[in-house]
Amino acid sequence: MNQEYRHSQRMIEIDTRLIRTGAVLTAAGAVLACAGMGVAAFAVFSAGRRMVREMDVPPSQQAAMKWRQAKEASLAGARAWHSASDAQNGSIAR
Image (cartoon, rainbow, N blue to C red):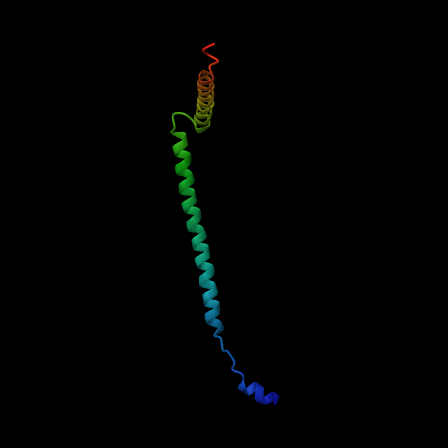
């Protein structure tokens, strides 16, 4: 019975040369893809550094100025809101 079972099973025949060739081509493609991503990343970072160097005001100073503007606008809004609510409550009319 054991021999009958072996005869009825099908064996998969794999060409190992094709497997090796596929693996080598996949590895080569991965190396080329990594090299391409490295070149593209270098180009993007170089362009970014060049753009920052050519700015009149550095990004850190721009951020500090915008932060001050936002704080001043927030304070002005709060003062206006308090003034309006005091006027509605009649505390200014007294």
